[in-house]
Length: 121
Length: 108
Image 1: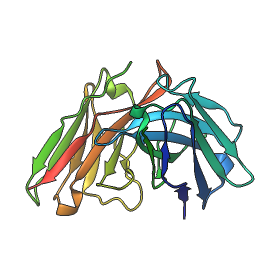
Image 2: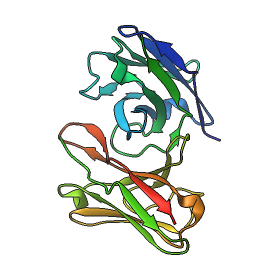
Image 3: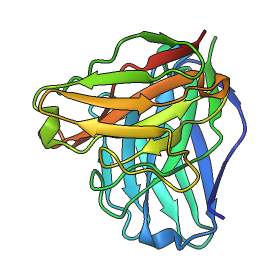
Image 4: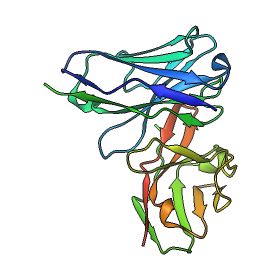
């Protein structure tokens, strides 16, 4: 069965960086992409970007462009999302989700369990 | 940028039908996906491409999409359907996914 397992909760200081991992199993990793979505406490879902597991192509949301880097390790079927220059409003649960091989053409059919990132001095 | 508008809350009695709307400019020309999120859990896809259901999603969940409004309909509502529901579309002008603000479904 398809599973996406994310790394554990993180607490960071403002200005620091965080790197969240998402290990995939149960499907051919390189035939899909991974989208990252975050949810601030009590708020809705916000798409952050997408990466192709086939060739590493990326599409980042304007709001985080310049602070975010998404990468792929095909050897371990793991996707990573690094967010830099953290601010208090980056405090959120970060989700990875499986998407089709072309961003925007399909939907997010499987999701990780979420990783809470807390930014606090 | 493209905006999706959902009602903040919808309430329904058990056994009745709940309708959750998602409005957007010319939304009928886009594919709409719907997600259910229960407290403390990750979202779950319940409808894709306007009206298709993933395996394992009850037939009580259905979707439709017209010119201005997409609708998620939940028939014979159960207590277990209480959750937040989000609609999603691809905005081709910005090449970004867009989510609606979410609707909290309360089962009375």
